[in-house]
Image (cartoon, rainbow, N blue to C red; front, side, top):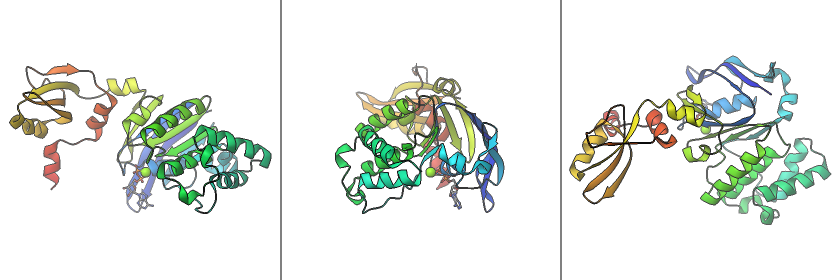
Length: 295
Ligand SMILES: Nc1ncnc2c1ncn2[C@@H]1O[C@H](COP(=O)(O)OP(=O)(O)O)[C@@H](O)[C@H]1O
Ligand SMILES: [Mg+2]
C-alpha cells in the first residue's frame, strides 16, 4: 500500500494553508507535528477527500483518491479535530449507528463495538449517554468510531487532546497494536505523544514540511546542539534573549539552563543529548527577545 501526496496545495482566498507538499507514506505510524495554524487539519481533510486541493494530487496505489470516491472511503477511518457527536445516544448506540453508515453488518458490528469499547477502556460506559461523558471519554469514542471498519488507512486529527496521562498511555498502546499492516497518520502539537510510537515524523510549519524522517533522523538533523549551563539568577535573562532556552530550573547557586546553540554558549557549558522536545523548540520556538520584538 502506498499513499502518495504530490505537490499538494490548498489556498483559502490568497493564503496557502498547505503549500506544495509532496510525500509518500506506506505502512506504519506517521506523526504530523506542528503548532496551531501549521496546516495539519487542512492536509488531513484533503487526505480524507473532504476538501478539494487547489493544486496537486493524492494517489492510493497510483489511483487518484477523489476519483476512487466511495472505494477509498471504505478503507479510511477518520477522527476529525472537532468531533461531532449525538448527545442523546448512548456510546454503544452511537457506535452501532456509525457502523451502519459504514456498511458493517449488524452482527459483526455488535462484536466489533464490544471489542473496541474494551480497547479504548469504555466497556463500563457503553450505556452512558454521550452528553454525560468527560472530554477524554468523548475523544476515546471518537477514536473507536474511526477504527470501526478496520481501516487500512487511519487518520486521527489531534487524537490525544483532552486525554489524561493514563488515557495517553492506553492510546499509544492501542495505536501501536492497530498499526500492524496499516497506515496511521496522527497530528499533534505534543512531542511526547508521538516520539515513542511514530515510525516517521513530519514536521509541518506554515503549510510546508520542514523536515521528515525517523525520530533518529529528525534528531540528527537538528541545526543546533544542546548545552547545560548554570548561571547566576541575574544573568539568566541575557541567555533568554540570545538563545532558545528549552528548560530552566532553580538550583543552589543560580538557574540551570538548557540552551540550544550551534556553538558552546559559555566555556563551562556542558553538552547534552538532544531530545525531540529540543527539536520542536529549535523549529517552532522563539527566543524571548523575538517575542519582545513582535510587541
Ligand atoms: N476554511 C478555512 N477558511 C479560511 N482559512 C482557513 C480555513 N481552514 C483553515 N484556514 C487557515 O489555514 C491555516 C491552517 O489551518 P489548519 O489546517 O487548521 O492548521 P492546524 O490544524 O495545523 O492548526 C490557518 O491559518 C487557518 O486559519
Ligand atoms: Mg488542526
